[in-house]
Amino acid sequence: MDIDPERTLDHRPAELDDVAPEGALRDAPPDPLAPIDPNAPVSGHVPPAESAHRSAALAPEHDWSAAAGLILPAFRPVGTQGMPIEAVDLEALAAAQGKSYTQPLLDEGPCGLAVVYAMSAGGFDIIVNGDHLLSWRITPQDIQDAAIANLAAWSATAPWTDEVSGHRRLLSSDTGEGNDAARILLPEVRAHLVRELGEGGRVLIGLPERLLLLAGSLRPGDEEFAALFGEFVLEHSGAADEPIDRRVFELVDGQLVEFAA
Image 1 (cartoon, rainbow, N blue to C red):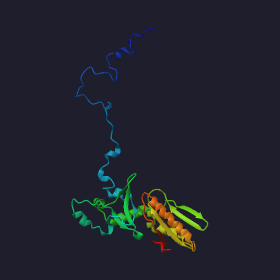
Image 2: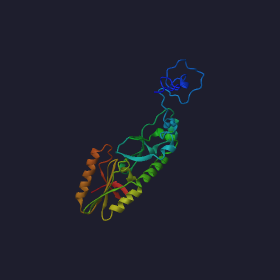
Image 3: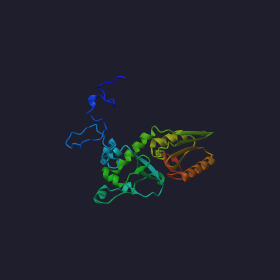
Image 4: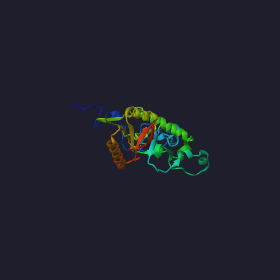
């Protein structure tokens, strides 16, 4: 076999004999004044995620422009404690420097139901409180308006489940997104239920849990259906993670009232 005189025994070209292979051990101390190699590896260095540079001041908890599109109303059981939204005095809150207002803002819903305002934070909700109100520098009316507008936008495309058995009919909202029961706050939803279920009968409403709005058509003489409807609401409320109310309601003149047999 012919040997190339230009190669050494380790098969490297002779002109590279004085060049250390990449990754070789140093034979001299590093020069601290030498230019930094931009392609050199840095042990343990992981570039921070781009989202890590987002200022905390721009988080929804501090920035109303970020929060306004996230806020939604949510029912809570009768007796829920909080800061009544109609009694909020912004000047008094701001004057009490150093004091924290962590109780949720509490609105009064139909039939004594409590309404809070929530922002989804991926697996849990942030409930709006007095501290948020001060941080955002807005009025309670701004929160109410934004929440109802967001709920209406969601509800416009959220589906209904329609069940029919003979002359009995049920409509339910159970999307699993947490806004189902609160849909009853919308005038357009109440009008829809009356159109679909109200002809020739009464419209029963159940709000057993946050994830379910139930509506049924009660025909004259069908007292059994009213009893079955009530039992269903009671059972679902008792087993729910976020129960609301065990009562049966009905729509009268477009408004939610407690059902009276």
